[in-house]
Amino acid sequence: VSLMRGARVVAGLDGSALHLAAFCNPGTAVVSFETRNYPNQYVIERLMGLEGYHFDARGEIDLAEARRVLKSILDQHQG
Image (tube, rainbow, N blue to C red):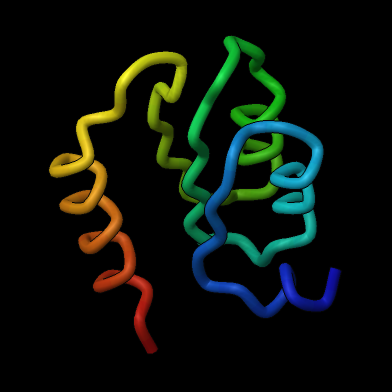
């Protein structure tokens, strides 16, 4: 929980581990690679004031686009 509280950016596959984002501070970027179509992560992000970024991981991911977006997110949240 303390790691999440201090994080500026967290990323992972959708599911219970990424639900720990509920302990992040408002404004934290949460990058979710989604393998299913459930609203849980969106709800956590809205309730906690988090910045959600979602990639559809049910098929092939456009790695060039993912790198571009992730670099942009990391650049915005450096500090």
